[in-house]
Length: 526
Image (tube, rainbow, N blue to C red):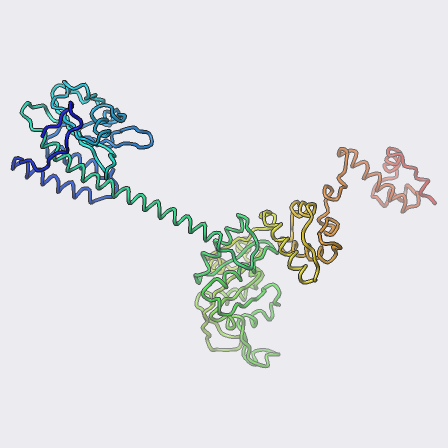
């Protein structure tokens, strides 16, 4: 049947019409080639140009064009074109119902323009240039009942041409393209679903994985939690670094108790606390009679931690002689006790911690470079408390509850002024200092609230204690100078010469300053 510009509401195309045998062979080859191309990628953009080129070659067309509808903007744009330049294709923009392409996408019906020069519907936005000598065939691309675009061709105008054959083959090809679009949509939706699910799981894990022994919700601590989660299930050596009092040992505990070694020993050794003369015996053990006082065989920390985790705190203080032996254990998983010849095999996960810059110690020749890189497999930085201020109140509340229960006190909260003091302090001792401050405050508090005067003097600031100085710098310096001169005169019983010697200045200069500040030295002579 013929589809024309005057009857856009025509019936569906009859695909059973008889066709020329040569064309039938050509079309079968074309459909096979298009099927092969579409199978190569779920991304339509990767294959649509080869599909249109194959159509042009097999069906002797001048142009083949694929347009797609943007549902959000309502614009119809050329997605790909064979026989058109990039500039020509960019001009192919239509609205729903506009031109032949707009009508086809609006109605979902194929249309044929036997001779484009005679049709006002043919807009020729791409300026193909042969309006009077071409025929134009356009069919919709449907995904279910949804029209997503159109497939069109231009061929030389011939009065005797049977364009129904073109409608039929284009309808078949558009159905194949629609299937590819459907698969692409499904793949994109599945990808989006998986990404959304992964993001949800990441967020869930982020909220869920907080080691029970560590307090803190800040972004800085969340990074630490993520690193603990990453490394816990592996046997990798971990180096925890950070300032004193930040909770490095708590991180080591969290790694061990979230690992597959959780039911095995967790053994600690504080390298800075062990004298150099006995640290080797503490780590590797000794045989009976190995040295004076070795009255019996002793297992070292490595043997005691076999199957579990050994935590070496303050690893930066370990002596150079022990560093060599430690390197061997990490590399070979074996050692000998002091005074022994038997090689002992161990399966130990080593976690180390330090508040020192190990790389600086390496550069100074105080720490072995090969040992440093053996320990530095997975570093975790524990931030100081001043860099995670969002956790200060949470930690303070935790310690308040802990020590109130221990002391049997009914202390319920921190006052607003106390919270301000805690937040403004720089915490050189980190979490350990905060814990000590709260423990002391619980002991000295009289009611059920911690007040500023319950905190130690180190936290008392001019603002929080109500003693903020007034005046400019010169007046404050003069006031301070006047006070120390008075103190010196008091000590010297009004003797200006003696006071000058005590202050490390001359009698003339001090006399000038006494006069400047209006001080009566005689009143201190008695």
